[in-house]
Length: 193
Image 1 (tube, rainbow, N blue to C red):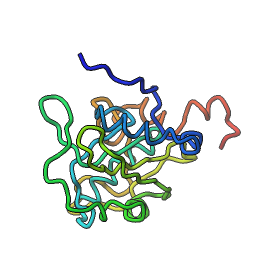
Image 2 (image 1 turned 120 degrees about the vertical axis):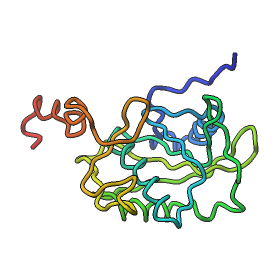
Image 3 (image 1 turned 90 degrees about the vertical axis):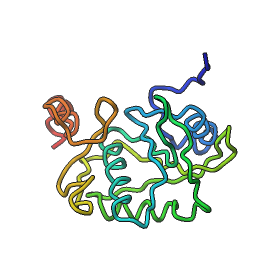
Image 4 (image 1 turned 45 degrees about the vertical axis):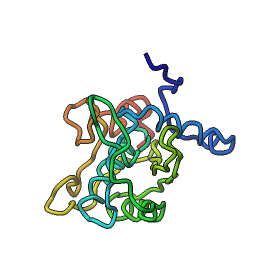
């Protein structure tokens, strides 16, 4: 049995992590034991010059932003019930910059917000992999402000969340809508309006 390092329920990067240097250890733990969870999304090597692939990443980022934040790990493929580094490693990672990712956020998210992009060293392969950190805790839910190409992946005026499975999709149940708009906080503190 493979032992996994302890990852707290919330694997989000905090300012304290950034300042203390814990972020590289946390990102390497994500790469060493890749898995999808409510705050972790894995994608293959997306071509971020392609509108279709931009919309795929946008959907994942929007869902994580509305679900408390988290990570998108790029360059992974599902195999045998687990996740491994995807084949066809790109010749360079110039297409996976913070500016490019935040350009996608600007294009698809309303209101827009800032993501960070790290290139972290995979502990087994020794290769760098892009990891997008998505903030959570926004004052309002984030909606898609445009459709993806051919209406695929992202639909204008739609809110996305991380659901069971995990998946990135619009809320399906009343409780998911209540959590998205913070109905519990409004009932407890009606002056929050």
